[in-house]
Image (cartoon, rainbow, N blue to C red; front, side, top):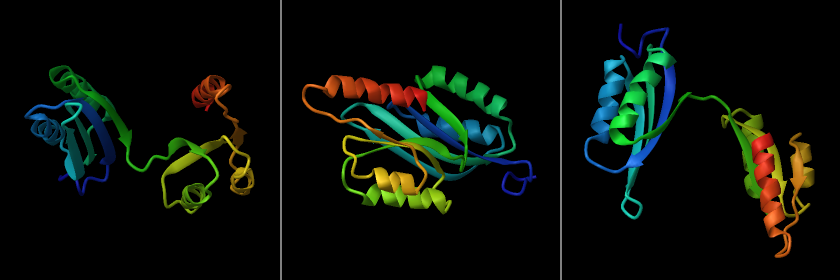
Amino acid sequence: MSPTTDTDATAWVLTLSCPDRPGIVAAVAGLLAEHGGNITESQQFGDADSGLFFMRVQVTAAASREALETALTALAERFDLTWELDVAGRAVRTLVMVSTAAHCLNDLAFRQRSEGLPIDIVAVVSNHEVLRPLAEFYDIDFHHLPVSPDTKAQAEARLLELVDQL
């Protein structure tokens, strides 16, 4: 049965980065094909300044997570890859950092609420109180972290604590 009609198939998203060199795309596509994968979407980018290669692939495959992860681990050794494999469409836990302009927060929160964007906004962090009412309207926790030249290091440390907690 082909991967596109297999009812047991899962849509996966693979993201990876590694030092750029020839053969990465072919190796990734080959690995996915060997596991019955059908690539439905693929983007890649080689950054000449850093010498790094970045790739995002969406693939439908009946292969188990364990089988794909085992194969990706072997590929990672060959190409010095850093990779993540996730189920497509899974809501990504998101911390939104804002200042005073409301349009981006409003757009993200609205699209989350209407299920048009697969994210789970766990909190909003701002150096101003201005957007607290908007966050509260969407039932999103709001954290005010005022920043001045004297408190910048403490505010950044607190932000990292929030990232770890949330």
